[in-house]
Image (cartoon, rainbow, N blue to C red; front, side, top):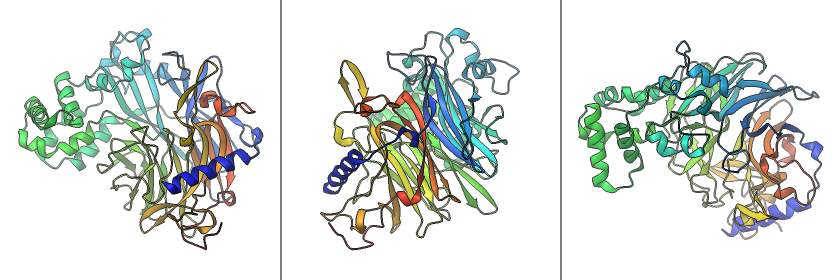
Length: 519
């Protein structure tokens, strides 16, 4: 903890001394009276950047830009020296809702069709974007209610219990663009395809695999009894007797032996986890055999594609237990480094996991032992610099954990103190991630300091970076307060989404122990 405390002190001092110009980070998406924008994704096609964000409508629970109501996905595009284009609508929540209610539509859902149009809630989000050559691929989830008594309330469609009970659904979708983000294919629901791919890999007993098939359909409502049984199997919070009873209950419902189902408990936990999402932020693409492999940072299981998002394979993330929101960096070869937000927002440490086989398996998630990266209850992002010697990743997250509680009241207004978006290099030392240090100091010494570099000093949130190899720079899209002056840190990060270019030469930090440790 001595290392973390010293690192945070240096971060604070460095950020205060920095001089910032707003023009260095122009606004791409700005809140207005009708919409607000959150959760950025970023990709490059040729020399142009494609920025994607959630466009949120309405205000519920008296919180601006909350996770409620209908949510669209939109894009803007900019080439070198160009202004950002007008918004391109990728997914319109209203239209998606009508299509899911149309029997002629390939994404028709009979459960959703009975919901009155004025009470339909459709949230397109938790997205991950990636470019494979000239093709853009965007995976996202859609959350929608199956009850009429919602009236826009978060508890109706954004509740784990309601999804367990079958009153709301989370489903994986995908879309793509072949013209640099100007036009997008109709969204395709791939939820059942992904579940079946993972069941084929994770469930070893053929009888159990066959028996759970009806539970994997993406266009039908799960029976409440089966849903409740799966809830308690996944959570395992009521003791061994209750767990055994629920296993037997589910076994009886689907017609399979209880002992056989018990042996597949771990697979069931993964397949039927209530936390269904992708990223949010970016996916990663890298050379793999004779094609490019895409690995999506999905929950509750890993997803990869070797054909540009047409078909999918399943990565085993069963060892990951603590982390939620995920982002991935390619470190060269088949090595991937994942950063994860801790499910416990009070933990204040970033978690990391490694895959050495191209996303097929992942190690248990854990903080960096010698020098944990501080975290402020938000998503973190990461991008690999695969052509460096040695390869490293640049990690972005908020480092304001020394500012006390996340939410405080200032002048009668509830403000969010998540701020100080910063970067740090991460090297793989002896197979484990280690942060870059200032002056080559060895981690664990009294004089060691993690080499954080500021990206945005004020109110900030989620981010999405992309490595531009020819120009040797990183483009980053991030949430940020859009005002200037001393109150910058106290403005809501939902004010705008900004873009910055960061030369690699400005992201400092050496491998731990690479030189003499000096004052």
